[in-house]
Image (cartoon, rainbow over the protein chains, first blue to last red):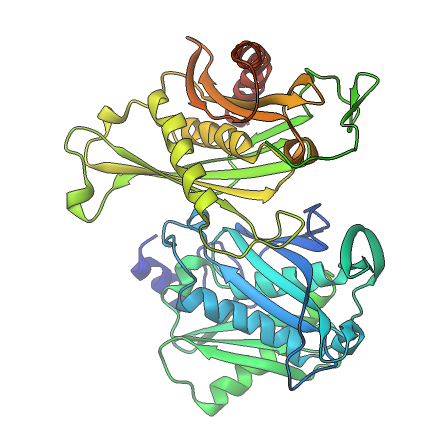
Length: 252
Length: 238
């Protein structure tokens, strides 16, 4: 699709797939799809397809948080998902994606990390959130964040016997306190759009991703894209993200 | 060869998952699962799940990598971090690099690469869930993805593992059998003319046992071949 065509459509109030500016594509969530993972989810938003797998391992707590479990979030843009992705270590975009998803989970206090300490200062559960993109058709942030939360909600912490992880036995459900929902709002000219397609992302001026809590409070944000935003624009985009987060939350 | 175990892998003629010695696990194949790719497929053998995507034939850069009289094929086999019990650190391991290479060589003889000079066919395989025999599962997915991409092929490439556990010759090893096997032989071949394109082995076997396993795999592979053709037909019926 030619960028000029995408721009022309947006300027006349339309989108390539005939959606309203504030409408999500069809969202499908499947959980428990990876047997080897302690938790997993596959989220499809339109043709965007993301799998998140949760693995639990034993590690040493950080010295400044000796009584807390550890959260690690990583994303790889494997070339299977898009002709634009290349093999190799995670680049800027993949790292940013992982960090945005991580921040939403971390700052919301989603996981009760204190319950994941095994021995203070010595041993704690490490929760690995791994994001695998299967097909990239835009809005990877919202899809990955949703898949991460959906996967965490079905995650089981295995039993420990003599410090060995017994993966086919469950000690407890992963203790969760909150459920953050991340919604990205894109800006093109004076228009705001939700759930941008890949072709739309390529012509957006900027984006804000907002992680919203159950009570409508915000726990993490990220502005991306090359253009600046006015205060009024930022305000309007934040309001729209909060409003749309309620809709997405209902899907969980 | 796997580690030693006291656990019986075969009891009263039945394997751990209840299979007979020459029985293949439940197979599921779906073609056309990655919209961005030119061709794609997801294949499941029991609890082993591989997804493959093919991009190309597409222009290859830098130019000095091009072949003037044919396309080149590149392969990447990768395990998702959550595909196994203990998390795999992302990034290529020595094992993954070698499997990528033998996978490429397993597929290459089936392709008419001279039809597309100066281009590349990229084959990407992700193991989403591992329970033994991941490389052959990946090759089956890649074979379907190549066909789905419309790359001209002499034949599909069918892959299946054979081996020996508790002194018994078996087919399609699952993870536990793989770990504790006496020997493990992954094989890929083109069924029409029975040409072998991948043959590896580790463990200990007599030459006669190896020959028997190869014969058994080629015979049982017919069933896998049939499933591949059905999966392709299904996509194009829709």
